[in-house]
Image (cartoon, rainbow, N blue to C red; front, side, top):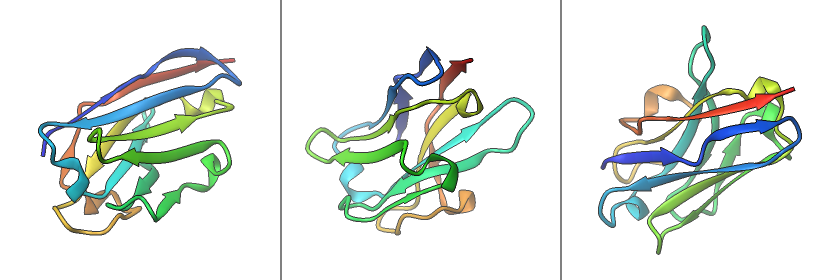
Length: 124
């Protein structure tokens, strides 16, 4: 599966953004999807993940209550709604998928397919 992340941008602290993960063809419903981010000079870290059906979600502690992951399998897309953004949320955001049929995971190593990333910059 080929993934593409979009929707990043430059916003002020406290603002909202929605990043979108789209897949080539109508393939995304068969995959769990995770969002990761990587800030300059830091390792890539888990942000959120959603199961294939959308019934199970995971979040890193620092985004709980601010970020919401959702999917629309009819539109072949997964969304990450980011509210109350903070400067420390600044990073390149990547969406990723494990092998088809595998469950969602918080572990970076569980993901096989990666999109190209979208830059999110939050100014103070």
